[in-house]
Image: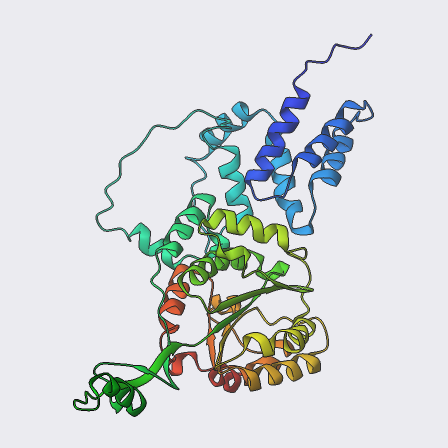
Length: 401
């Protein structure tokens, strides 16, 4: 007879699923139940069968394979023995760190495996360092790429986004409103008020032009290539929607979704949860031209009124025909007062506008800005109240290409 089961397999699988969830993989309760059913069926006899069964159940996207592979080979070994060997070898194999930034998936995996609740090793001794001549942690966080942030840094970044001061762009309308110190005399109201005294005393009533804000329309790309940046950008949009009354927000990947109502909740976490429920094509493909056509034909005449500005957040990597994209961008240009393109690819110092989708969109935008860090969002918050200078002129990138 075989040896009686120890009873720890189910608990270890659940612990392993929590580690993957903490590392950023979308592992829900249904996937954990499927993994437990597969493990308890008795058909998994070898390590390879166990690996590929969990891989088939818990890995949903291709880019998650490397994180799963690292987590599997570290989790299902003896962590104490591995830690002792690493401690013995680190002093002898110390070397300078490379210039290539660490993979954010591996960084989040390390946090998920060695956090306070699921610790696989004892807490190290706390060291106090003199940081007199080091860079400020807040300054480093503000310049850091959203994709390279750890889970703790992402929480700090969301709190910093909530504290941003959003500027407003105002303009004079053709309509008038009563104003005690106005520039113009309101003859109709003056004569109406003179009737109260029988026309013996006339006080001049004055008026001036109304000042109002320009409506703002946001189109945000939620495809796989922009997913990490659009999630952080949603927190910025939540503050924008709750600060102003004339903001309309759309998300697009393979379809167009209006999420303005979902973002109107005061609690940011509740708003993001409602957005996740309403959007069905998150982290999918990209059809910029088709979604812009849907917006132009169904929504433009309703929301692009009274000189509305447009914020377009996408990387411009179109998979469909760029001729349709150019046509719809031209139509959007005729309807909008000012178009600001927010592109996460500008995080690269040597970015060049060589992709066909980017070159098809560039002639029809007024500003070209990055959207990959807290500094870029801070600059955008200030730019909402004024026009950009030559540093954000899209013609600069077109001439360079």
